[in-house]
Image (cartoon, rainbow, N blue to C red; front, side, top):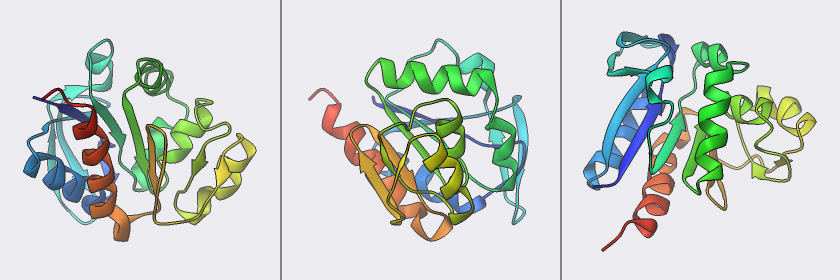
Length: 173
C-alpha cells in the first residue's frame, strides 16, 4: 500500500491544509502517517486536534511515497530545522514525491531544494523562494517533476489530489 507522511507543527498548523490532503490521500488508498516535532496531540490554528504518531526524528530513514509539509504560522518551526531538511533532501534523492503548502515551501527553499524548480507558496514567501532559486509561479498548485507546492487553504484539496496522482502513478499494480 502506498504511504505518505504529513508533517505538521505542534501548534498553529493550518487545519484545512492538513485535513483536506489527508482525506484525499486516504480516500485513494494511501496510508497516511502524521509527524511533528514530537509525537502526541497537535493543535491547529482553527482548533483542530490532530495526533502526530511519530516525531520527525523518528521519520528519518523510513521510506515514504510522499512527504508533505503542512503550512500555518507554526510551520516556521521547520524552516531551518536540519532534520526536516535532511528528510526532504533524502525524499527527492530517492525519487519520492515532496510537497509543501502555504508557508511550508520555505522549508524546502531553505534546504536548497527549490533551486530551478517552478513553485508557489503563500504570497509572503515569494521573496524567500526566489532568493533560494525557485522559479515563482504564483498559481494555487504547482507540480514540477516530483515537487508539489500550493498557495494556501483554498488549494488544500487540489494539493492533496496532485500528491495522490503522483503517488498512484508510481505505485506498482
